[in-house]
Amino acid sequence: MLQYNIPLLITNDGAALSYVCVSVLPDGTITEIASGFREDAVSLKGVVIPGFVNTHCHLELSHLKNEIRPNAGGMKGFIEQLLSARFQADEAAQINSMHNADREMWEEGIVAVGDISNFSRSNSVKTKSKIYYHTFIELLGLNPSFANAIVAKGLALQQEFLNGSMSTASLTPHAPYSCPTELLNLIFSNINVGDPLSIHMQESLDELQFCKDKSGPLVDFFKANKISFEGFIPFGEESPLQKLLPLFPKNKLQLVHNTYTKVKCIHKHFPSIPFEVLVKAATVNGAAFLGMESVFGKIKVGLKPGLVLLENVNIHQPQFHDHVKCKRIQ
Ligand SMILES: [Zn+2]
Image 1 (spheres, protein in one colour):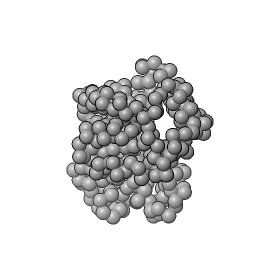
Image 2: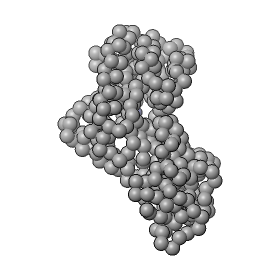
Image 3: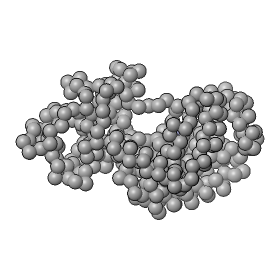
Image 4: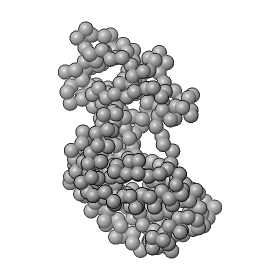
C-alpha cells in the first residue's frame, strides 16, 4: 500500500480536495481518500490529477517524429511527405519507435489511448504496454466499388487486434473526402452501439475545396498517385460536417481537426477556461469517450485512474502555464 499527502487533489468526482492523504494499491487501485496529512505517507508538492487520456494518436507513425515539415504544401504536401516517409524505415525500426513513444506517453502520465491504425504493426507494442489502448481501425477508399473489400480487410485487422491484446478495437472512417457514402454505411453496419467513432474532419483548405467541387491540390495528388476518385460525388455548398453528420449513427463521435489541442495551448489562448474544466477535458472526458470511465478519469475509491503530479503550480490558483511539469506518481 502506498500513501501520498497531497496539498490539492482534483478528483473529477465533486469539488477539489485540499490537504488529503490518498492510499493506493501497487496495481493502482485507489483504496482511500482521507482528509489531513499522515506522518508516514510520501508528501508531494503540487496538484494531483487523474492520469491523462489521449483519445487520438497514430502510434504506427511514431518513426516519423521530426520527419514531416510543417506548412509544406498544405494537406497535399502533408500527405505526400507522409506517404514517402512512412514506409522508408524497416519494421524493427518502426516497432522500436513505437515502443519509445509508448514509454514516453506512460511517463508523461497517459493511462489510456485511442489509437488510429491502418496496419497491425502496433499490435505487439500495445500487447506489452501498461497503457490501455482502444484501436480505431481507420478505413478509407475513394472508389465506392471497393467498399466491401475495404471493410472485409478492416474486420480482419480488427480481429487481429482483438486476439493480440487486452485492449479493444473498432472500425472508423478516415475523413469525408476519402469515404464515399457506400463505405460509410458499410462501416456503420459493422460497429456496435458502444463503439466510439473518430473521423478527421475539415482539417485543411485542400480538403474543403475537394469536397466542394472535386478540384484543387488533392485532385493533382490523386492523379499523380493514380488514385481513382471518379466515384466521389462533391458536396457543393454544404460543408462536410453538414453533409455527413445525418448519415452517422448515434455512437460517440470525435471530430479531429488540425488544432494541436494540448491543455497548455488551450490555456494560453483561452485563459478564462477554468483549470478544472481543462483537467476534465484531458482526463475524464476522454475516458468516457472510450467507454472506460469505470476505470480511468476520476480519483475515486475502487478506480485505477493513475495519479499525475503537476509541479510548479500555485495550489491556491492552479493554471496550466508553460513551466508546469507533469510527473506520473502512480
Ligand atoms: Zn489523426
